[in-house]
Length: 339
Image (cartoon, rainbow, N blue to C red; front, side):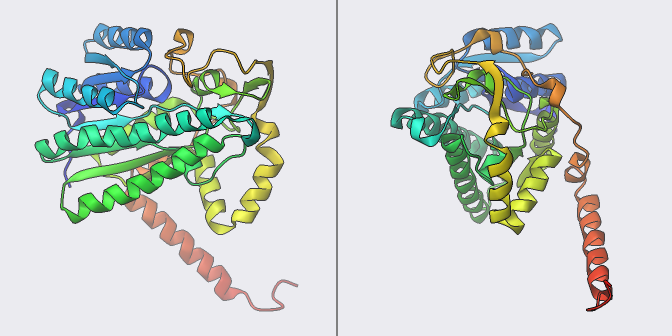
């Protein structure tokens, strides 16, 4: 499957007013792509388009709530009406409610599902006809490590991300069976320093935080741009995410015990915040958070394994050598050798 170079692409980024989506839109535009940015925040989109145009990039904006399929379809229609085609669809829009399950209302849980899962489904439904019309392209969906391992206090968001992983697995195989050269990628970030924790709903009595370590949004944007040119199935971003993924595969009970110890107290800050405080669960926008970074840059660390994902021969060679080394160690062990 051959995808176009980024400088020849028309790219839609949904959930672009802040965080990963905003950083990704800027990077696509700097690489020469024509970008269509969408979100609920009109002020955030306006400032983003102005920023992109200030350095000579091409961008237009569409205000949309992804829980409404017709609004999402309008994003795709606008992209094709303006630029004549659609090559890559990046879907990053999400919301959440961070609270113990028993404090979450059915309406709140449903809203998180409608935005964070059904919004992604609507994106694929809107984009696929145009990607098929073009004859190739990429669907890039921003999932989360919570799609592999749920976190306490985030049951609606974790449920949505698990649902997204199931949806993408099914869709990917259908397209492969039909021999469509359309790449379906799941990007699974670890904890990222975006305004997500400023914008979501919370009933903790304080401002919530992700579980450190944090990573900067730029590493997720780099993964997305890589997937736009190189067909990629799954891309776990952040070394801590890779470790958690491995731990969950090896021993789910051990992962349970670890998260019981650190994940609940680890999501509380000391900054008071009422459950009635501004949030984007049902609201349209919180303009002061229409920015790339959140408030936790001091907790960010580098991620050292990203280069392996962008160099598959090295990745599999390294894993093969590690497996051989492990096998050699086991082969040299005999009962009594450890005394």
